Amino acid sequence: MKKLLIIGLLAIGIQNLTAQNFTRRDSLHGGLRFERNCFDVQRYDLNIKINPEERNIVGYNEITFKVVEPTTKIQLDLFDNMQVDSIVWNNQKLTYKREYDAVFVSFPKELAKDTNDKVRFYYSGKPKVAKNAPWDGGFVFKKDNNDKHFIAVAVQGTGASLWYPVKDSQTDEPDNGASIKVAVPNGLMNVSNGRFKGSEAIENGYTRWDWEVINPINNYTITVNIADYVHIQDKLDNLDLDYYVLRENEAKAKKHFKADVKPMMDCFQTKFGRYPFWEDGYKLVETPYLGMEHQSAVAYGNKYRKGYLGRDLSGTGEGMSFDFIIIHETGHEWFGNSVTSKDIADMWIHEAFTTYSETVFIECAKGYDAAMNYINGQSNNVQNDRPVIGQYGVNNEGSSDMYYKGALLLNTLRHVVDNDTKWWNIVLKYSETYRKKIIDTKTVVDFFNKETGRNLTPIFDQYLNYTTIPKLEIKAYKKRFQYRWVTDVANFEMPVDLLIGDRKIRLNASNEWQKAGEVITNFNDIKVLTNHFFIKVNE
Image (cartoon, rainbow, N blue to C red; front, side, top):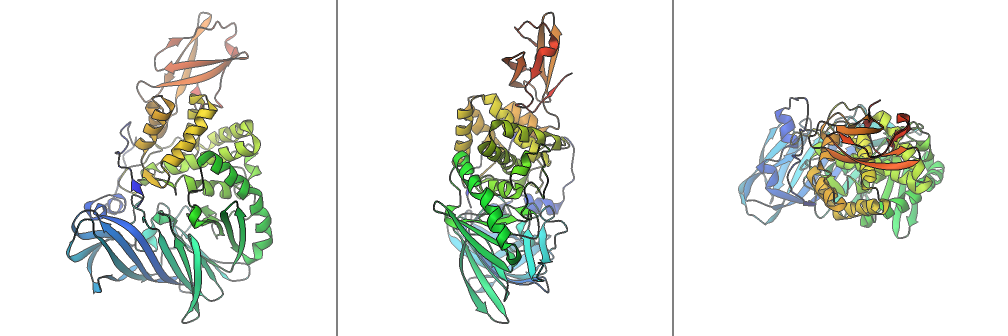
């Protein structure tokens, strides 16, 4: 797995404002009991055959692991609608017990600490079909316009164990990468993560396509994509850019991808650091669903249009200047695939920074004003329905506000810092410090506190753990005015900028009423810069 930074879960505020009921299944999926923590995955070697007509998978995953604590039992995971055919260790079949999607595997003797071992987990079955991928996890079985099979999978949140046996936890990624070998009927190609290692004809009219990943990889981003693909090759400096598209879309793909991919890579590598998975290359793979951040094999289904399926989610017009899926899902290569949250309750670490990367791309391409226009347009999508952070240990995500509210939080922090050179250096250092690491919210907060030299903890707390955003109250006081923050968090302090006429004033506001020093002849001359700070202001 990536180096796991165990600093403790966030304790800076109330995690949820409403009680939720979680089941034993939730705890088995999201929890970190001894049977999960006692071993560290080193490598996955997946070798399967997919029958598109029967929608069936058969094969195995060989799981190489290091024993962290002496044990006779480990927990692996496979959805309970899939069949465990056998689990083999040292040429002997192991006993196991299934509880919902958890498979508790028993060994005939204790595995010693610091030893390496492996099991080969044979399985088969018809994996769950997604009702609405990628939001609902599962396989998508479709046909292209030439009546060829067009198949893919997306399982973020639902769990990788939906379709293959795995240690289904974000806390553990294979240190030494993975191989993904997938046999499909002749005339079709499978595209998975990493580098293509070759294909081999096997029995009964199937061809096996072999892929190799060198880097650690999130288990939910290991993928298969099956279609009559055409391969388009390109390069940016020494980075391989590979595109796998339906044969019918080859011409439009060549033109469309050229517009965004290289400018995006130049921008992101300047702001966030070198592409994290250089050794595995970069791919866009056409899929029968909208998109997903599959590491080094980004799923693309935006139908070669600008915006998000031809519309601008910001409502400003700025979002029509780029292909949303290319930019957003590639942003996840840095935030989500490289910098990974320990628990999906902290998925804002993925989604806030990646949504912010859209604004970063616009600023690279069109400048600051266009970027501010775009990100503030996104404020109309904030629901303030639930806390951004979910419940830990039960495979529970927080509110979808992790996207837009999270990005607006980062834009707010940029203007709290009030020094763009310093801000971009901090963002770059954050991306590079936690490159290919697994972290939690406290790690993020501590980092930004240290690098900014400010106590930002109450700010993160308010935006991430409560359904309200800070409200700035201003009221007249003789020829001057008073101001304060109204927040759920006690002892909240955050600077805020406003204009009085054409003069920019910074208020170091807190929850206590303070008096401004400026004389006001007309109270309507005060304009709070709400395009820099995601806040409410009293009338």
